[in-house]
Structures are given as structure tokens and as C-alpha cells.
Amino acid sequence: MEVTPGPAEPKAIETLYKGHRFRSRLEARWAVFFDSLGVRWEYEKEGFTFNGSGAYLPDFWLPDLEYWVEIKGKTPLPIEEAKLSALAIETGFRSFLFYGDIPEAPIEETTYSAVCCYPNGAQDSQYVWCQCPHCGQLGIEFNGRSDRLPCHDIKHCPRSKHGDKGYNSNSKRLLAAYTAARSARFEHGEKGAANGLG
Image (cartoon, rainbow, N blue to C red; front, side, top):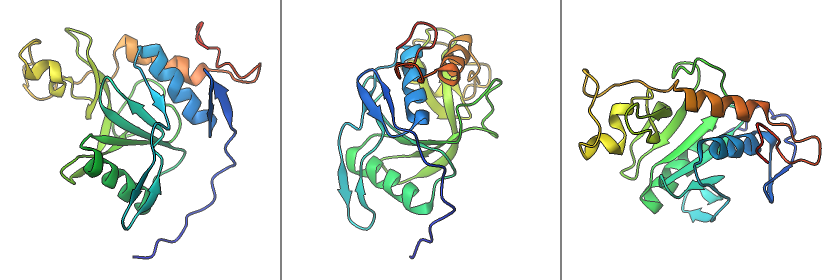
């Protein structure tokens, strides 16, 4: 299948943050988001080559959550989604592609979400960050359904009355992290100063 390139994106501004040279300000802002949540991240940890979809260097590896996260400024092209799917299949870990700007509150899966690729080849959309209201566990789940976080699987935390929903994508902790990421300024020494981060 031939893929026709879409309209050109505005030129990304390379940005230095915490010793990493990010390819764009948007990627650096996501690093601020992860730092605000206390989520460990590794930038461009490892490259891959896939038959049919070529070379791929995913943006982030989140080791504690075992997620790959790719960041794009606009709606992904089919080839980008194909690479994300190949990454999930090859590594055995869920892979997410977030696109567009850092969201503003309230967070809604209909206006801001990620594409999710599973190791079994399945693909879905409308995945957003969420937090367990009981233990504080963070994760990325369909529609921000915190009932699907791993802490519920081990019966550590009670599920909501719906049993599979428990929407919690607008917790104070997540909203503060989005605000910190949107507020990050890199102009003065490119340190990403936001609420003491950087």
C-alpha cells in the first residue's frame, strides 16, 4: 500500500531538558508531564527495524509501567500506526501514540486520546491517562477507566459500582501534571522550568 505524505508539520524546535535533546518542544513537555507524576522515563531507549514498516525509534519507554509512548504533533499517518503496532508485537508491551498538544482540563477521551497497540496485534483508540482513586496507581486505559488498572486485578482496590469503568482521568494529580507540562518554558537556558522542575 502506498502512503501519500500529508501536509508538512511546522518545524519542530529541538529542546534540551534534563540532559536530553528532544526533537520537539512537545516531546520535552511530555517529559515534564512524566516527571510531575513521578513516572520514570527513558528517551529514545532503543531502535527497531521491522519488515514492511522500516526503522523505528520510539520516543519514550516507561520502565515501571512497561509502556512505549510515541508523541506526534498531528493525527498519525497509517505508516506511523503500523510501526507502533509492530513495536507492540515485537516487544510484547503495549504501545501508545499521543498526538496533538498537551490537553487542558477537563480531559475527555473524545477530544484527546491515544492510539493503543497490543502485543496480540489488536489496535484501539480513545486511551487516556487515569489514576486509581484508592491507591494512586497511574496508567493509560480505554476512556480513562481506572477499574482496568492492574491494582484492581489483584483485588487490592475495590472496583467502581460499574465494575469496568471507574473513570478517573481528571484526578488532581493528573491535572497538575498536564498544567506543569503546558506551562514548561525552555527559553531561558532550556531547562524546562515548571513548578520547580528542570
